[in-house]
Image (tube, rainbow, N blue to C red):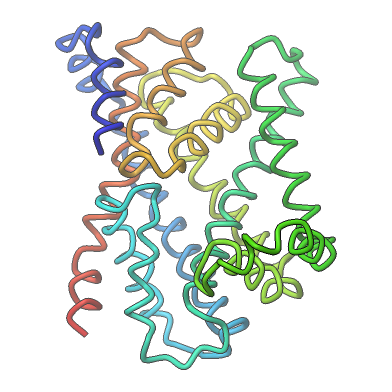
Length: 301
């Protein structure tokens, strides 16, 4: 939370607040309604993915409405848990279900799928941009390096997971022996084994989920009369989402805003981009408010 506050202070200290307020007030209502409507496919897709994971991997079939409560309820927890890791609240909520796959591992799987999906969307957008106008921005080069590194790492670990883990355990036996069963190392190892036969299906769901969210960003830009192009938004906002996923801020606020203002500076003024940054916070706040009844209901149970 402190880092979010510090970054926001440096972002907004030189911004004309009255002008930014005027820009927010001039947002197109039609595009705003479309933005609100996109929460429906977002939440339904996220719920369907979680329901499918608990059924196909956890081997427990729970009602769709229960999965809905789990998903939207965890959005509320994102407001207080760093790195958008609100999904961890599902761990106590799912204790009554006898899952074959540990619930902590399934939550960790979701985060792996989310990160990989965002990177794939970012890299796909970057390919289109490079074919259209070439990679001229420094962030393009940085995004290319980050994206390729993550993709290669994910593919290497997944395809050669057993050999990779054996090699790692031989190289660092002392460190591995000290890791608890719920450590990131063991969670990653378990996640890949549980996910191996279902990866294409769940990856497809995850890409669809994040394409909807990238579309939300695009609609926000259109709200203010700016049209950088869908693929520019796909790249810049994917990079912003990755920055916001680093567990040093609350709900990604701060790092995400800094990337948006920096990358899209050639498309709009600082006050307009700051206004866009504020509206993007609604992507977190609105689902969190919708999820409050589910959060309290599941916590009470």
